[in-house]
Image (cartoon, rainbow, N blue to C red):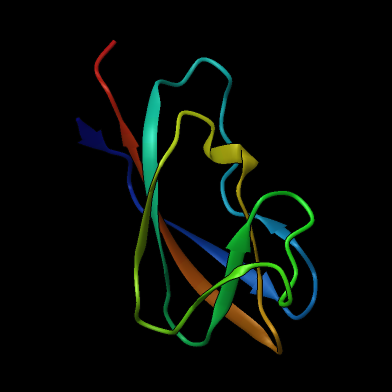
Amino acid sequence: MFFDSPQNVTAISLTTVQAITTLADQNFTGFTITPTDGAIYYGASGVTTSNGQPLASGQSMTIATKTPANWFIVSASGTVNVRVTLYKGHR
């Protein structure tokens, strides 16, 4: 397993943002998200602050999935910077 370079994504108040955009031919095995300056909520398409899983500033969540583009984030207020690291398997 190896890492992609971490990316920064911005979660915007009450606006759902795709956590990761990927090319279809990538061999991903998962990703880690870490909000750096505020809380976020994460989940599938349509995630809100009511139905998403909360993640506080500085906490990390690693999610094992072959389809990371199916995960989304949202913040309750303001903008929140989120660090995203993808994990790839061997081809």
